[in-house]
Length: 189
Image (cartoon, rainbow, N blue to C red; front, top):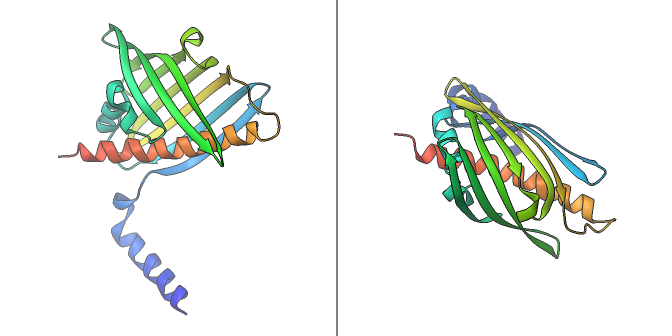
């Protein structure tokens, strides 16, 4: 009976409090393996305006604040106002297995809300990596669409490895959405 009363309270109050209080909502998250590559497709709605989310996403020197998995982030070179070379160090654990990775990426801001990322394999733990971020304003919220493809340069154990990588990518996608929203909301007036 208490469960039903709790559900009734949620159903009654939800329309009143409305969408303004919701947290980051992942609408679609798909992680596929194709040979040695992993593909990530993510769509989410962040409860923060586009300008603030964009600011957090492109504050590369502080990107480590977005997710607990990212231990360091540093701008190595500013090639022009829209193109930066960024180094990150990340760490992830699944069960008792932990892996630290490093990436050097070229970040190209193509327009407000459009960011293209390319991994430099010579300076990274990945043979290949590309990502695209698309952010769109939607009535005070930000719609995020993220597509990525990566190929690890490190050995992946055949049985548990692919499952572990998918698990880490799934958790990191959710943590990144939450972190972007949290930091963007801190910037609200």
